[in-house]
Image (cartoon, rainbow, N blue to C red; front, side):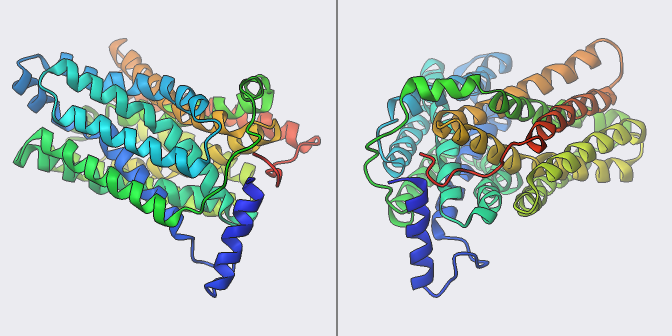
Length: 419
């Protein structure tokens, strides 16, 4: 069954329930997908707060324990293509359930690991599900709603990720410190089970994929200039705010003069900015996709540049962190929609959509490295902010270049019969 027929089925159900397809209420399947992104967001980032506990239990250094984060990031980048290619002929709903089963297995292996090596194995297993779940989930989310609400649907799916930063990670860290770091991963596995059940109940079946895109066609999408340019925005945009936020704790302590409680408050503002920016970006992108990208990337660059000059002010720093996160995550669902549309136009959305999630992680790594580079070369603890502004400006330049080509004859709509 195609995305068009999946959307039609969802629309018919909405009318049967008395809810118009274009009404305010989203299908419950979106919330099942959001629960999945919540569990993925928690398992990815909560490990940072648990590293000392893991290191103590296994008798290793914190830096060695940090490989639990590094292995996950690498697994996200390389795992998504493998999982999507292996599951290419499966119905998307079936693939999502299997992926979430693998997610549960990975977290259980981590939680029950008798040694650090097994904990690493568990993290790698878990990471391989990240890109595939979010990428395929975004395709399903966009197919369940009217075309003019696709970015909103993707953004609502991503609310799970933003709530993970706002609520899930602090809760997971607290659980690890109060009980055991293993308890945190058992809890994440339980959320994974709940997600799989919610998908089984709420996500419409999409039938047997009789004519899925062949591997050669999926790979050919990566030779499309529009797909590559869209993915370049994926890398550069998130890289910008990760250049700054990675070093926000020492920046706020040493430059702005915040104490530990103040830094926690700053991180809360960052999470709140992610949540609100994500929702706003999705709704606005349904009205004008490329203009929203231009505005949010330009806004992010200006805020980061201002942050560099105002970092000594506590009030200004708090405002800049909130706006940086809001502008930064307002680009996420529009960028994902953009990549999906370009890949769909090339006839192969599945692999590109999933690989694009890995590109977000690549951007995170580039941003963290770039911020560390400017600090190490003596530019000061506030310097990641101007470095981040450069990356956001570069993302804006790519977006403007892509948009210029679209105005010359491109079409930003998803073909109704895209696989």
